[in-house]
Length: 338
Image (cartoon, rainbow, N blue to C red; front, side, top):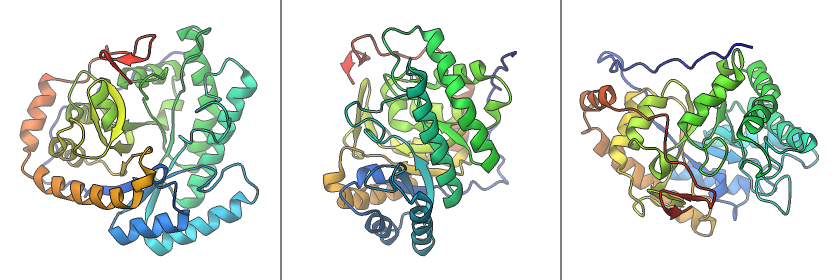
């Protein structure tokens, strides 16, 4: 199979005649794990969110428990009643293995273990199709110390092929997330995966862009990364973060300048959900959902003052390079423990 190089993103500024669609703000259920799913959806609707990023987990639409189709249908009814759009996320920590976080992975040396993760993702695609989801999210996992990079990338590609086929059959984008410390950790890794997989898999293979991860380890500012990744971005996660530290923070507790970020999402006509991801803050989930929405709405107003022409000129002189900062063997990024 001959690898197909990824297309180069356009540097042409948005047409002044084309009005960018409004950003659709969402909140992740992995930050509301102390609430019943129906209560969480009602809360987000009452606060004024446009959508929800639904993590399939034992407390919220368990993908492994009996009666999934009937339970999914009830969630679909609630989504209609609350008017929320939905994206499906698959980052539940212990849904497959109660002892090892995020295991098994798509790059596990054991083929049966890889198959378990692939089956979970195909289930997520079916759930996403039944709910009319905007995208289905996934990630690579951490490379096994005894495996080479080449073997790990080949395993990842092979494990994703059946998931990509299922997503293509349903018309859903499959959105792979670069995760600090994982095999696929950055935007360069996403493009490498597209090359390894070759055509036609990349036709359905999109990107989950976590803005905090851009701040954590990409060389370019998050707004520049948004513009460079725009042709492939199908799902966006949003939180505050500090350079070199992989810790999801409430807005205002990190270093991200949000008006340029929101302006870049708007100016690139991004149409998916922009979902707040605070998975370690469920103890304060309802209040953080409220304050996060207020923060984003305030910064959206400020982002109107960020010039699209200035952002486009930045794109002509900068991009997300292919050699971002990488975690060391000790799990540190940029000299700070993640």
